[in-house]
Length: 402
Image (cartoon, rainbow, N blue to C red; front, side):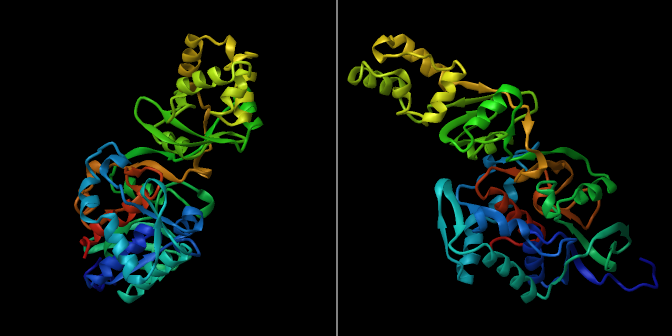
């Protein structure tokens, strides 16, 4: 800024009125900073609103660095350690927002996700912060005392610029690559962004087969060389989805196979052997219908992956063992994913090598911060990405559990 201009109007200008941006703004405001949040959307925190079927899976009690993907797996440790799931729960308790735990440590609101959005907005107002929606960014400039941002609502100036505009997932909700554009402008490297927590698609015979039993679900283990997840799998009109598939998708690369244990969590060989002893004249398909959904059994027969054996009495023990082994390592090769349209989160993003793990501040440009989904830290399904939003925001605001 020139000598004739006043100092920046704001101490911190936040781009992005999502979970991370709003949480940062309130925490920074509580520290006495004058904060403004801007967003091109007409409504704030839309991803919070739709999360968890409208009840917001706001964190996971099992949060640990191992639940996140990053080129630097150590980067998230500092922020996650200084603001834990229970620190966020404490804020909900003080607000009177009741919650419950579902499977695998996932915490949800008892009521609607709007309660969390209201808390974020009320905290922002109580801390003296401003929120300007329907305000898009045209340009960002680094100046002597901070940053000058040209917006659709006019010129804005601030000592700090906090980028919390998210990644590329779910573009119909307004996702853009603005954070990456700003990062590149100031010399930051990017880990190529890719859709994560996203269903797989297939082509040809596999697509036809899976579509024919769309809606069928079963517990499986989905795995590759990098990770393994024991949760449900869902057949869809386009391919495969369900928690186990969404999880493994974050570790998948185009052209790779995915191995699926269709008989996960049970001693299928022992169960089939016992079935044979009790019902020797019944068909193999009948025996497998005690292990898998009947429509899936029929599909496996049609695909030649279950033999058309008329009687269990005709199945040797070795044949049972071999069949169980094959279905425990059922291999598929996705043609791709459903992409940004349905991806729950963005993997990759702003390289953490050029950010402070303690404060999320740029090591290249003082006063510039990146938080939340735009950073190369991606959580598992089940509340982990919201916990990263809260923790990275608290780190940038210079607060912990307070």
